[in-house]
Amino acid sequence: MTQPAAIQFRAADAVDPLAFPGRIAVLAGAGGAISPLARRLDRPMRGALKRFLASPAFAQMKPGEAVDLAWPAGLAAEAVQVVRLDARPTAAEARRAGAAIGRGRGAAGVMVLAGAHPRVADLALGLVLRDYDFSARRSAPAAPKGEVVLAVNAPEAAAAGSAPLAALAEGVFFARDLVNEPANILTTDDFAARLAAMHELGLEVEILEEADLRRLGMGALLGVGQGSASPSKVVVMQWKGGAPDAAPLALVGKGVCFDTGGISIKPAGGMEEMTMDMGGAAVVAGVMRTLALRRAKANVVGLVGLVENMPSGTAQRPGDIVRSMKGDTIEVINTDAEGRLVLADVLWYAQERFKPAGMIDLATLTGAIVVALGSENAGVFSNNDALAKAFLAAAEAEGEGAWRMPLGDGYDRLLKSRLADMKNVGGREGGAITAAQFLQRFVKPDTPWIHLDIAGVTLLKGDSDLAPKGATGWGVRALDRLVRDSQER
Image (cartoon, rainbow, N blue to C red):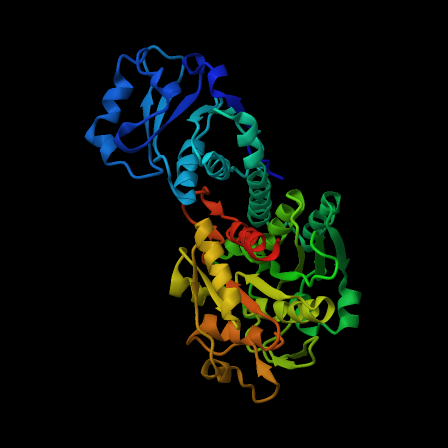
């Protein structure tokens, strides 16, 4: 997998920024305040740093923004980067500042003159997350990148404080890698093998094959994958870091490794992006990796349904009726509304086997949520106000956009089928909501539940604050925060 940049925390009084060959980042607060170490740069720069800090250009900078003073006279550095960051910023501001530093890290490396700044850990996380580059499928080796040095007053304390966020970064990178992989590489077999390898981190991992799924009665999930040569699977990952008798939080992910739409085939334009239709499963995998790496004191189970939705002579047809593990029958009106069929069986299995204290599913489920919320927010649907409030607070704290959407009987009635217990689509009106209503039919009334429709936030067409164009890993940070805030005691 793509590895996050290794950060070296060094004592500020033991580094020589005047001789550093790469980019030197200077944190500047209100009024142009900088650390004593940063002030050492000004004399060899012949006052250029001081003049910039007193200029209107600096005054107009917002927290997290950066300006490069290229090839400064008197220094070995290729640039001095002035980063606006006040003395007591929010975590989001510190991470944006770190991302500005991490963007475009070159072969000569970067040194951050952080001194005694209280948000060093968040600064480091932002730097690492924005530094991500998926290069595994390029023929030429990735261009080498230089070292990352954080010059701080207390290096040992800074390193210890950043350790949990290093685990978080690795989980985000794991999720991003999975989403960025092409479907000819990330088959259901390959995906399951990557998850199985995480047993080395202390996770208990088991893979349910098609024969197991048939015995369990997962007809809804199996129907989706029956047209593909790649076998359908369910992978169960357990992290048992909490009390032995404590019910786990269940995370359930849609893992459609490629979605053609099946017989209800999608238009050709943009279909190549359907490699990201396993984004929900990728986030679940990333969260589980993070929890294991940081030895979380909580019980969490991650379950992912892995399928490929292909048209063939054996593919599911519009009009087919399948029976779910719950026992309900479903009329398949549109084979491109397949993710809800996968989740229906995995949600029911999660409840039957684990009796979770709460359950959260993630899926790139509908284009309708993209129309409603764009790429700034994921849709949040829930049957439990307390759980929804806790998740939204975690998402806000992590700077991951999320917006609660409604549920209601009026939407549910749109799923009425003439031939079966329900149909898998409710029409174009409120499409994201009727999809959530479908899933709610497979959630027991006493199970606190959230459905996250992440179709708009999983793969971006341009850079975001903390990620380059492509996979974002949205949700790993918010769910890890939710576990820390509500599950760990």
